[in-house]
Image (tube, rainbow, N blue to C red; front, side, top):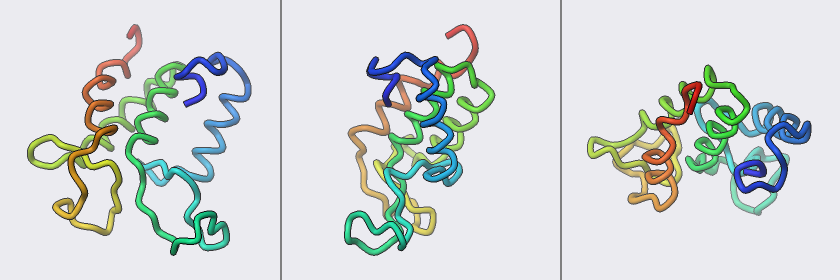
Length: 125
């Protein structure tokens, strides 16, 4: 999110390092976790296994597009939006092991992000 709010320019080396760390530590294709839920990290005192926060996946797709990684941006966006229900709604969070009907809807962050950013993941946008 750092380059999306203008805190650092997209070409700052720290952005590339942050993306690599997210891909390595928080990315469970196609989902990006808010933080590590591995038992050894236990940062929140809750049992491991929190679902992914879909907005994080959209943020990663945005950064991919801003850095010219369109070949990564659009497929990631498509894989996340494929989890929309039959009305096209996305939940805020998701666990792959839970049936879609059990997700919490509506999502104040995920659905608007999907509508706003879907077309930008192509060169020249």
